[in-house]
Image 1 (spheres, rainbow, N blue to C red):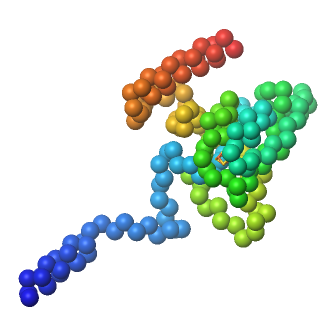
Image 2 (spheres, rainbow, N blue to C red; image 1 turned 180 degrees about the vertical axis):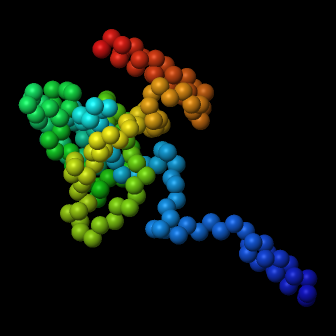
Length: 185
Ligand code: SF4
Ligand code: SF4
């Protein structure tokens, strides 16, 4: 009779002295893994120009039709990106998005990355449609590189990757090709 009681008490006491894992959200915010797939961000070049060239590949690849883009020509007086075109409109409908990350993979210029911003609740359905000014990275934001869904701060970063060997080797090959392309303009 006493033994089960003591056993139960010991379990209670064990949990009493354990480190608390409850996060006092929203005062405290749990740090998400670097590959967390939440709100999209549209990257800029180091010089502040937008990376997006309005090729529409992300919109075409999106399985739910969540991306809507209207392109416009760049001119010398109004240059928004380095390419011939820029995205005049770049809308994301969060009501449709399922955060699959396919748009990230589809983009040829590594414009889209997904961030750890998960506070996306709104009180009106219309507010689920986010516009370019809400998605594009603020000027001066260090670029993040997206490749096979593995985000790195910059391509020259040589820190060891926690990847299976075949992916690591493929990644190194990709970096070399990228370096060659950049050298030859
Ligand atoms: S994460 Fe998936 S569903 Fe959302 S916009 Fe990108 S491709 Fe579309
Ligand atoms: S985000 Fe990438 S894929 Fe989408 S339109 Fe811009 S450059 Fe093209």
